[in-house]
Image (cartoon, rainbow, N blue to C red; front, side, top):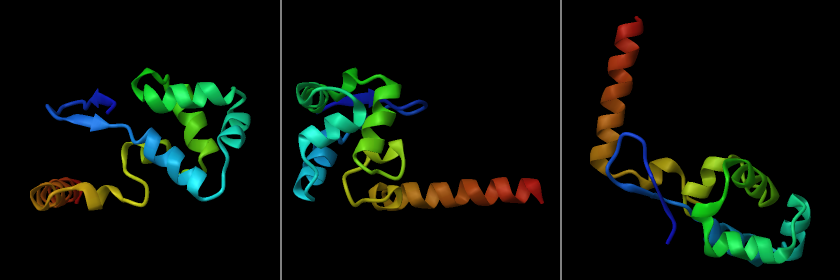
Length: 107
């Protein structure tokens, strides 16, 4: 499991590279096609799947594009999940309160 430290939090953020690559393959995109879109060999893509924490930001962007993801941040979420799906009820409430406070300051 690949993790990177979240800024301002003590918990770790998981990169879901393997899950997104497997989903793309299940949807008919071959590993060769993914590699070709990035301009690397298929072994490189498998290396990224096995060690996603070693991916440079520019490669993360290229991989997300090759996988037809909407945004590179989707690599930090399981396929088919939105950021709101991953937040606990307490986190959602805290986020809503923070947004409300910021909006009141602007008004």
